[in-house]
Image 1 (cartoon, rainbow, N blue to C red):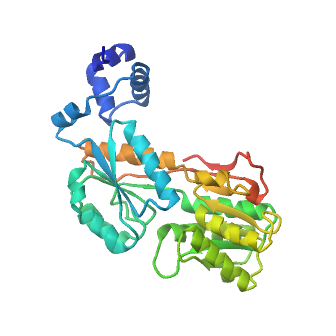
Image 2: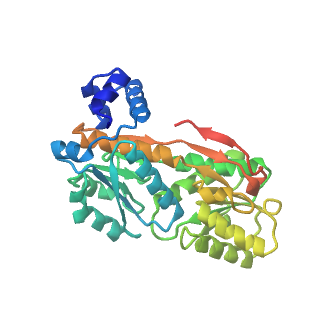
Image 3: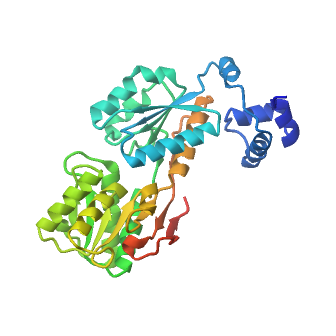
Length: 348
């Protein structure tokens, strides 16, 4: 016999109306209430009738996720986190990879796909405060992932880019490194996360009383392995003296690490390396890669919750903004062990 919403109400001790509100992501509920109802749902194996629910509400039961691409490991893992967070709410996710560049990002906001979903989670790399009115004019509930300032006008979830970058650089300085390369700066196009991570790097140098050396800030053509490998090849060819690298993402770090090893340098003895993103593969690289964990699951859960509140009719005039926490994972590439735990954490 199939489990019904009445069974969930009976086991949880709440009314059918309360159980329905939890299933539908209603914002005005206590965390304890949500937890008890969810526990009953899990215990009974209850599955809501999404077709009936969506027919009654006039909604699709689908949200959109607009990201630059799925070939970049960070965005692939972010998409997985969003799908899991949405599935926990009984929501499906339509993923739209749009490529890079401002025109692609703007075209996605004008596309017809926005009418196929109840709301959109939108990961922007290039839009900025000058585009605030465009974002506000989107007629679908919208939550932006990213770090460009929209002046409090748009619902937004950000990661601790500056604090995380400072923590990574602090760690390299704490283990005695003094010539730390910042790998991944962008030349030309403004990419907010690159700027913010460079800010964290420079803040760490300033706090340590070390001079800023522009020769140690290295540009990368792309935030992929090939970009990290190409940048490291140029650094070695230039005869640059350095004893550590803070790479602005993990794939840059992995590409750079390969070139260093092929050149006969030892990691971390000759060059210590820290990345950013805590991709799954960093636990299996040789050596394992120290990195900043930006808490993708927390980003995804916050974005889904924020979007569902807006979909539920949250016409609150004030935009919401959440900055998630981070942790520093110290592994072999900076002198830790393969199983090292987090050393520095932000509790956001």
